[in-house]
Amino acid sequence: MATCRGIDLSVFQGAQDWTARKAEGVVFAFAKASEGEHTHDAHFALHIKGAVEAGLVPGAYHFAWPNQDVAAEAANYIAAVAPYAGPDFVHWLDLERRSDGANYAGVTAAGIRAYATAWVAKVEAAFPGRRVGVYTSASDLAAGHAPAGVPLWYPAYPWSGAATYAQAEAHTKPEPSGRAPLFWQFTSTPLDRSICYLSESALRAWAAGTETDMALTTDDINKVAAAVVAKLIAGGGVLETKDVDNVASAAAKAVLTLDGVISAPADAPDAKTNPFWALQSYVKDTNARVRLVQATEAAHGAAIAQLTTTIAEFDKTIDADALVASITTAIETAVSKVVVHLDPTP
Image 1 (cartoon, rainbow, N blue to C red):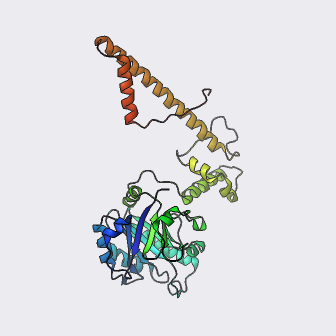
Image 2: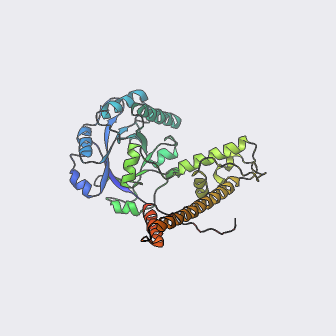
Image 3: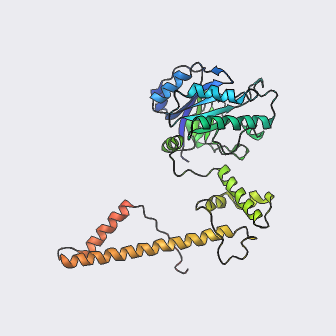
């Protein structure tokens, strides 16, 4: 699994040796910007300027007080980061209970979730097209505090004391409460260290909003599965809401999302009662498309052979077979060719 490395910083850390951090493989750095309605982190400018100048993927976080005014808190964060928030800047809400519980006092789980949802929406509106996620713990996830569908940065320390990036990279990816974090903070010693479950290039594309092929997360797959079930129910199918998690395996759900909406086959009178017709349609459609590619490839090969034969008739010095081989090699070098072996019978 591709990963990349990063750190996060606050007033408790001094100026960093960014050359040393980069030598450790660090490619992203997030700094605390603000807290509550009015507080700004005294070292934010120091840390974020250093990260940007070092060419890292930069980002910032706001420590949440869900029992305060969410509009004031979002405005506090926005004002703090606005001078530094470029096109690849990542924004985070640090949603975790203080040790004394003061920031959660008097707020229900639903209230905390509503606060987080509103904060994310306000920051997204202030920085259109930018990434806005939530940093939160296993207990917060279990309590339902974090809104669904947002990027997740998850803290969990399976090792006592210091831990290395190599340990985290070799460790099983955590999935707290069935959520798949994009970032995992795995230690606070000697610094808060995290890994991202993307390669460096993929992270940079994600942060800039230019990625074209992101892996489906568990949340993505479950949303699609739920939508499929809801559509079947609305159409008079026999599936019930409780069947959402049993429609298909996660792998099958993911497959069914790769090619948009898949229509029922013309020869499927049980389309409304058969929960697997979509997969059957996908297989038939894929088979037809592969055979079309094979036929097209064969036609192109015949055309190339005919063209080279014609050219050789005008120039007797040209070896037609060698020319065909040369053209074929050039095509295969330029294009990554996929060869699919199928049973020849339709």
